Length: 236
Ligand code: FPP
Image 1 (cartoon, helix red, strand yellow):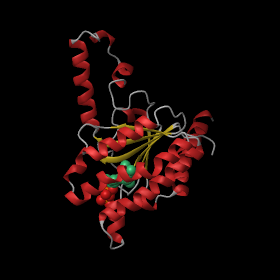
Image 2: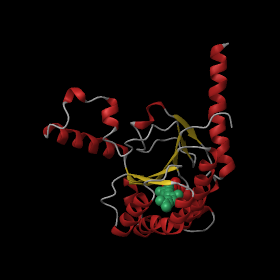
Image 3: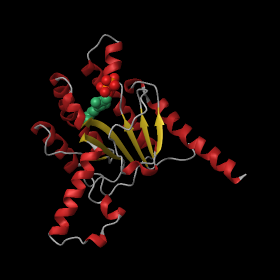
């Protein structure tokens, strides 16, 4: 690969449909999606991507049937139980972007533990967008800014784009170079709307469980090959 993006963000859409198409439940689709997610974490580390942000649960997802919500909330517990020792060995750091406080206790504890255990790791950052909404993130940032102004920790003339960045859940992370959405829909779905100002958008038709390593690598290559072609045309 000629160019490796620093930060890839992924909207993992299509698990439910994948399950239904096979006569399985939506939750079985999420299980299959988790397997694919593990494969793409490995592929990202091997490719030298520095940050992989995964849209794992949006604030909208609370409206789903209770058994599906319960299943989605159980996934981080099982996932980190299984994967943390390996992440430590492979120097992978876990971050969470989203409203952690309002997660069920078991899920909250599992993600806090994963972040704490891996906090000094210096390899691939896997950033889970969990209980995430871009609009809430922006409102939350504004509330914190107003508080800091009131407490005289910040003056309004100090506020600029990079200061604003520091009030977001993604504080400290560079903006995504590329946002990939699987499952055929061409929407942003309240994901990283501030951070996506200059991101390449890549929409693929495969349902997420089918979006295996080779398709992932090809999607990234396609974006940057097109990019290069445009640049060459421009130069000529
Ligand atoms: C959207 O597909 C996907 C989700 C709501 C969940 C994605 C989560 C994972 C792949 C695993 C998360 C794992 C951990 C450990 C955090 P959908 O169900 O909306 O698909 P549909 O469009 O077919 O209905």
